[in-house]
Amino acid sequence: MGSPRLATPRTGDVNMLQVLPASASLSGTAAALDREAESAAPARICFPFAGGAMGGSHISATKLIHQLDRSRFSPLIVLHYGSGQFGDFLRSEGLDFVTLPDTRFFGESPGVPKAGGKAETVSALIDQWRMIRFLRLNDVRIVHTNDGPMHMSWALPARLAGVKMLWHHRGSHDARGVRFVAPFAADRIVGVSAYALSEVRRRKRAARKTSVIYSPFDADAEPIDRAQAHLALTSELGVDPDTRLLGFFGHFIDRKRPLMFVEMLAHIARARPDLPVMGLMFGLPLTDGIEEQINEKAKALGVSDRLRLMGFRYPSAALMAGCDIHVVTAVNEPFGRSLIEAMLLGTPVIAAASGGNIEAIDHGVTGMLVEPDDPAAMGRAIVELLDCPDRLTAIAAQAQILANRRYGVEQHASQVSAIYQSLLGTGPRRNRRRW
Image (tube, rainbow, N blue to C red; front, side):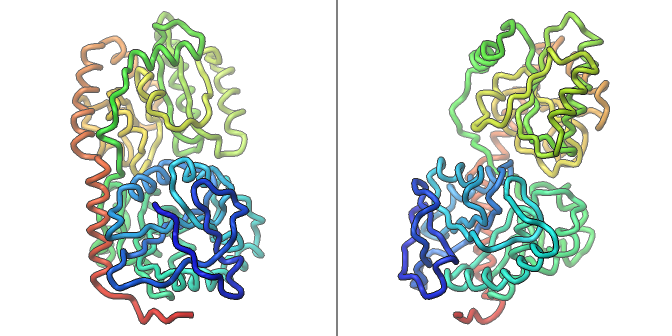
């Protein structure tokens, strides 16, 4: 994304907007974006984010932004907080963004410092006016939100600014926002899986606004030598090269079931003490005290020597390729990125039969599904596959074929672009007065 053109700041706008090229620091001069646009200019699409810790939704949105046809669409990435992990990631990706440093949003977002309490909520309500003005000043045509706090914070400003809203639901199927707010606030609701939209689609009028578009992945990425990746990991860990590595990729929150991963590892250790197995957990501890809980459980179950907390690492492809099996203990996942990433890399997947996992995996063909919240069943499935290398290889090969066919970035961008075009063709919600 090229740097936005700058206009002379209007009085009172200095704290409204900071233009930050990917190579710039937060001390860059604040200025309003140029509002001069010809009728044939690309439609400006606003992507607001809190700006703190990043996860799969941020990666998916970034891949879409990279892929958008700049002759048709002009992405405007907006962060409420520019000093967080996502801001650093955008800089590393060469993507420019703007910040709204004094504009509050509703809800909590990991990695973004907030005072909290009633005063914060009142401030967020007042700042809705600033967001309306921001959208109008920058001639935004569509607001594309990607998480709960941004859905709730930008819905009213989009409506009052006469801007169309695409609500990209990547969260729980029973989230109150998508069920009760999105049907009225959003012009279109995109879900990452049919499961993610299952509740909102119970209402016929709301269902007509919905579309399922699977998240984008680099299906044409350079292949990774999994044997070499495995050797690199075992060398880093200082363990025998024949050690079987089981990967957990995801932040440490309850829905991901990080404690169950430890319990599963203990079941394997008890059932096959002769099998050299190590569990590697990649992710951030987004729940207070969760790292301590993981370590305490591992110690209590006698598997501390078989477990490593590896932290959050990006890119993670070589790490995932180095694992013998990618283990998805998560339940009620709308559609986890790591599962598809593993399939594309040729890493076999064993997942809980829950949520979007069921849409992604053909049991016994492209992966294995086991009863949710059953660490013993997952442990048995892992041992069975490790003891049958030919079947493990066949499952991984079939999964790779399916994933390459279904989850490409170009296909995702084409589907989202078609929705943008349909929204642009229906006219504004109301007269877009300049303030």
